[in-house]
Amino acid sequence: MENISRIKEKCVGCKSCEQSCPKHCISMVENKEGFWYPSVDEESCIECKACLKKCPVENMEFHRNEPYKVWAWRNKNDVDIMRSASGGAADSAAKTMLQMGGVVYGAAYDEQLAVSHIEVTDEAEREKLQSSKYVQSDPKDSYAKVKQRLSEGKTVLFTGTPCQIAGLYAFLGGNPENLYTVDLICHGVPSPKFFKKYLEYQNKQTAGRVIYFNFRSKDKRGWGTQYLLKTKTKTKTKTLSLDRYGKHFMDGDCYRESCYKCAYANTSRVGDLTVGDFWGIAKSHPSFNSPKGVSSVFVNTEKGQKLFEMMRVLAEVEEATLEEGMVKQHNLVQPSNRPVTRDTFYKSIDEPGFIENIKVGFQPKARLKSVLPNKLIQKIKSL
Image (cartoon, rainbow, N blue to C red; front, side, top):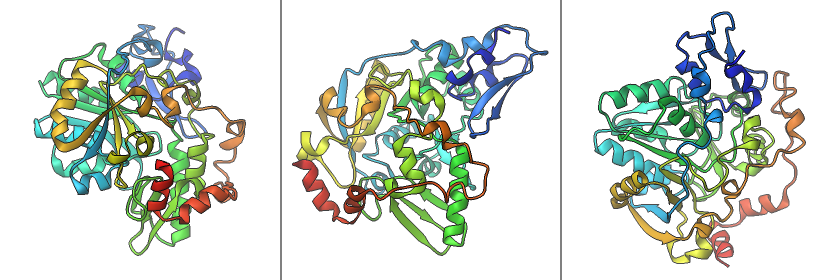
């Protein structure tokens, strides 16, 4: 039948089709790996093609723009920048929107540390959106909620991966004046099931229950790639590349299949702003570098420029070139490579000891880096 079922592995899991179907005959079902894919009740389907009209895979060219300004961004607020993955640009956008009386949508942990998109309307909730979550966020019914808020005359900011932003535009069927979007430079997303299994493993390791997890903690070594987890009685931190989950996130052999053919892994951006880590700042703008982190902000549209101007009071900024902002950001050039090991990575996910059997390897460079003083690492980077 002519409906969303023909998208198959190209599906990005945004759930636009589920929220768009007038007959409510589409449900998102978790496959064996733990990724969501649409399941259609073919008997109820009337082949109206609403699901295809609202699918980002079918509307890849909508709202695509090349960046015309690039900035290095450093949040002035010490608390906010330390809670952010890099320079706190996405958080500054959220803070600005809330100060305007608007509504913000972004990825957050729930009490079980499952990640989904939530609605934030006050400053107290904003902290939930800070820092990176390296797992696919469940959009749930956020698109329908955004549509409702826009119809009420609210100004809305939606942050997420490029495919989630594209899914929102496809769902809305246009670009409402009071909608602002921030897309994140994305490598790819592991499955929520993988992350859930990993947390269960950490519960065993710590002989407790993990109640806090941060993939990009700065508490011990400043800006970099170290995670931090907490139970009621213990705190644990480790370099991501030396961790059973983090290693495979960084290797890219656990991503959703569509990530390896991502239509948004280039400089043709779907968000009004694009934000990420400014990894090359130590060399291109050494005086602006900071152990607290620096974001790159790509201004892609007039609305993006308007939002940037409203935000910039919250930060120290320095103009950069596109080339400088793209250093070590290969997902602004092409999608992540699909390793051969992806074929078998999730094969035993339902078997006992799945996480315990994941290999990390010796990795002498990463281990050396994990014990060197951070100031020395920053000095080496600048050279």
